[in-house]
Length: 165
Image (cartoon, rainbow, N blue to C red; front, side):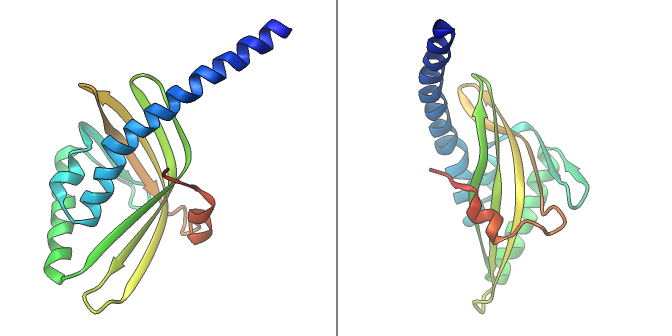
């Protein structure tokens, strides 16, 4: 029994640093450019972190988009927002993050703020589930789904999740 416990704790000791390093890679390769591209309404930067095989689903809308459809929808939205002189800001917090060598899953809560030209702000919350795949040495979003879960996701849900770092 003692050997089993030693083996278990040794496995945890070696797995945790590897998970930490993988999550740092994911933050740098996916989440930082994702947030910057979203907040700057830079469609090309935003989409650069997505696999060409991406499946995007807004569960509230019951929609499923492929890469081309997602790109077109995102570009139209960014252009419309910029034309109105409005801004959007996304913040992410996490409840689950784990990975293998080639795949990762991140689950969390997002807060999106829309700020109109006149300064009026509206905040929206939802839960996201993202599956990533390592492609040519870089993490890419393969599946991205989100939902407000019947508008039950709120600021409290957001604050209860862990910050990105």
